[in-house]
Image (tube, rainbow, N blue to C red):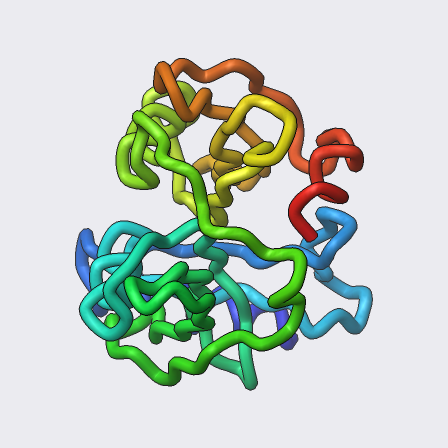
Length: 196
């Protein structure tokens, strides 16, 4: 019964939003959709694409966005952004995925000692998203700049396909070439240790 209500609500939201609405099924950290498992992950409608969320975030905090992630927060869908501000501080910015409004922003004091300014890349976040979407059509749910220390810089772009399958695409930050296409969750944990 609950599933029918959720499907009806998502369908109604998509129809109400016209072509600008995108249905996105959120997953837990293990890549499961949470259906029937009591998970807090749910189906929701993201009307604001990653590029629009980044633009809103940069209007609130000028600088460089190194990560944008679609997340379910308190029952609402939001984009969480990591911004290295022009003030040389790291900021967390939250953007409503339904209307593009900035819900909150604050300086991120966690991990200040091991977070450095992002290096210059030839490929911007927007260009990385465009390259990933050429390789796998769907909806971007996350994008992050990785490998800035010691390794080759690259963008990791998570795309949820129209078939519901999650893909992680790695976009070279110098050339814009898609260097890997593998199911989400198959990334090398060694890359994550450098930037966490």
